[in-house]
Amino acid sequence: MLTALALAACSSGSSSSSPSSAGTGSPSGPSPAGSASGSSGQLPGAGDQLQDSYQKVIADVLPSVVQITTGDSLGSGIVYDTAGDIVTNAHVVGTATTFTVTLANSTKSLDATLVGSYPESDLAVIKLNGSPGGLKPAVFGDSRKVQLGQITLAMGSPLGLASSVTEGIVSATARTVSEPQGSGSPGATIGNMVQTSAAINPGNSGGALVNLASQVIGINTLAATEPEASGAAAPGIGFAIPASTVTSIADQLIKQGKVTNSGRAALGITARTSFDQQFQPAGAVIVAVTPGGPAAAAGLQPGDVITRIGDTPIDSLNALTTALASLTPGSKVTVTYTRDGKSQTADVTLGTLQTP
Image (cartoon, rainbow, N blue to C red; front, side):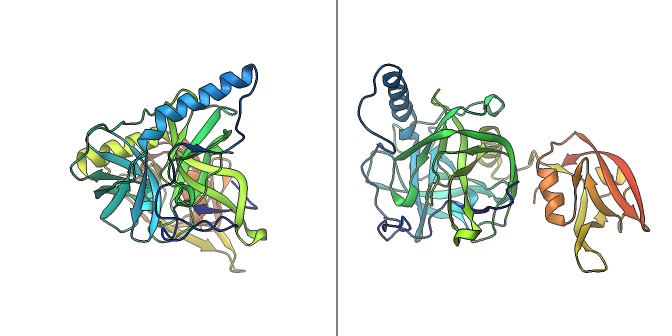
């Protein structure tokens, strides 16, 4: 987890202004397609090969990345299939049900409607009305093969600059990150995120994080900010929801209009933060136990205060949520808790988080 950094979702709050010198504005129209950050010009030898690889990936994937406008805000999305389904972040769509979409290499606006949203994993699907021909769905990669140091390209509409590309590497994998609460975002805690050094800015949310095999390995979702710098962006620290989570949730939203298998671990309890006599957070107290659920099967009861999950200390409900987000259904963990002032442990086989 990040101790010195805050996080900001990467959808832009406005689609009507122009970029300022500080990079805080968000123009409404798309800029020339295919713009890319970084140095230009030919590089000798191996540099030529790497440049050729970049250009091939951009040609392969950028046509699948779109700009989404919702009221006065904007974000990005990825063409998911030829039927016109587009996957994006739930915080990009917010509470809206209708949207304007601009395809790459186009200035024509298309109408789209909401298929379904799952804020718990910050994912949503919208669909183009009367899907135009020639859509190019993106290819999603295997999240299990993402490795530290892999070159990545982030594609989207940062600050409203449509069809923009930045480059970096996979800085870390399996990050568990809690989003800030805000419009359209309940402050979800998401596990197994990909951390990247590729620049991710407002408007990039919902765009593609791509490897050099032209595969989408994640959806750009969050960027870190530095509290000590008045919330300024922390360069080179961004996060993407892994492709395996994206495809699982998107498939369910498209087929069923809702998510029935979250893929998220759960204890089968309702809990709240517990406070000690000095009014300091001291654990997560169980308020209710789901009959027949994992906690009930392990003998946990209302009133028990969870203080540790495996080797992870738990001092609040948020800490418990974060710990569970890093685990998978079916895994076994040792839960340390206090009952009547005495510390005890229970071995629990985790279940699946129920969806609304």
